[in-house]
Image (tube, rainbow, N blue to C red; front, side, top):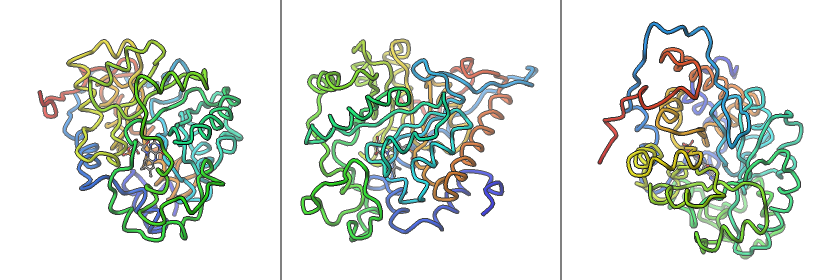
Length: 373
Ligand code: FNR
């Protein structure tokens, strides 16, 4: 279909759903147990109201900002999500190409279906990437990957260590698709060469991918270990409480954290990032000045992005939206997805009476309906 005829992310998801395989859909769509966290992730944004100011010159509006000091064209980035080539042969490289004109950052999954070298090929000079790490039980595998990433520091500006899924959540849509191994058309680059007989033969794409992931990571030992193998800045992903956000902020080397419940795919009924943002604001607001707080989960509209920024997020990620964009039209589908979100953020800010990202703050929203304590 003509990408320009698609006007919002739901329409893009609808088209993608028709075009991608059933298994791909089940893997992308799925979330833990009853999908409560997944639905709340989006619902919580709908319950926050905006507080537009009028009589403000809004001829100009600048969406550019920074992530860890690097210039980005907009406060929206691509969250790490595995196996993009399940949706379209353009894969993670297509995502990189699709977002390039917006100057957006892309975090590449540990379980990407293309190599980290392939993904950044042909990217624009200022285009930045992060690389997401699942530390493997066989540590040497992660050490080898880190060595490769260390060689591409001009592109990969940070390492994202995901902490919210030491084991995969119970994703029933995914598990219902049988015979994963036989029908999985692409092997994640990082798993290539692994012995097949060791891996589970059914139980969904998620379980297959998580096989081999270490479950013994701790605050005490893991950061020290990681710093021995890379000097690229480290970002922790999947924090869901003010306690953990505060703990992270106590490590002077930590420059950013990502509040996320893994798109609802890990522990069901875990809180949406909005709740964690509100907790941090209440109990340890100094976290925001010690490090950058990024959030993801449930983003469907530009207004969702703006609300997260108002609550103190420095940048906002989309996982499924990028994958469904890819499924709807490859690289062009991703481009259209980011074009829509870019326009929606721009419109929202102008109608709020704000002309740059750094001006957004709590005074632009009323979040009382979602404040719980
Ligand atoms: C993910 N996510 C994820 N996160 C991560 O750190 N490493 C990974 O490999 C993956 N893989 C993955 C696959 C798929 C299909 C999805 C949908 C998600 C989680 C992702 O980074 C992000 O936290 C959520 O996707 C954000 O929620 P939305 O935008 O999908 O609602």
